[in-house]
Length: 299
Image 1: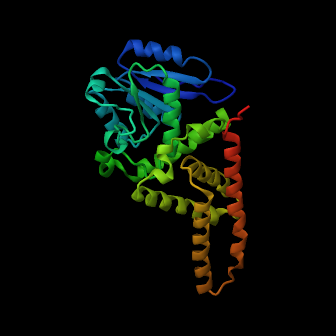
Image 2: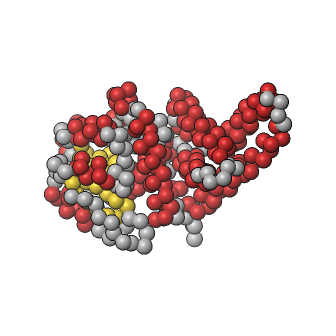
Image 3: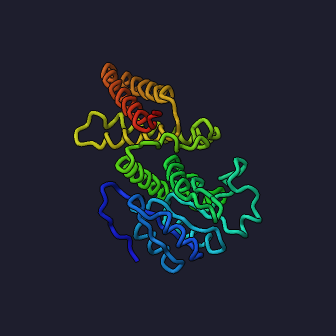
């Protein structure tokens, strides 16, 4: 079974499900009909094949939490396949779990696939908002993807990080084309904002952010570079993490100071660094435009 390309005016959101209940299959088929979504229902026999073939096109997975799930998830981790995911709580799990969606839940400990997954009751019909939330939270994951605590040392390797960055870039572009970012502002998850992270998580995030900004600086005036895409990706990161422009200014000044010291040691004029104010202005303009386009008009 393969995913077919549907001709629509805007890109569809591709959903792949793994459900054991025919009633849920019927329910979600009915809910997800229309031109916004493209849906494929997998079985336990062909799910892994479908996901491996369509991992660069699937936008969200929906599967049930049951005895078969750990084996499925383990395979996805081994293949470095990370996608937005909605997990449906089956009745047995609901009985054993107290308030699975409460603010007290520790995603590092309780998540199965990755900490951006969304867990909902198996009979919840508001699956549309759960899909939107899963995609929004997935886009907020740092590039050093934080898997469930018990899996970090085993699977948090370079392949998973590369896959995460690729999927985030693809999803960001699709959201731009599909929604023009309209309403995305309100779908950001405050629990994933930078100031809500632990000190260790903030430090890791800043390392990645500074590295990405340095790459943008080095490529900014080069011909035939991919700097425009790099800026888009960088702005998307700071938008979903709700990082202030003051923090970006700090990163810029730290980098300019480091470059100035290097140029001085080499006996070169550091005035050239003034040109890179354009880089900061460019990023600020991109970020302002993203906020402008994403916040729905109140009237």
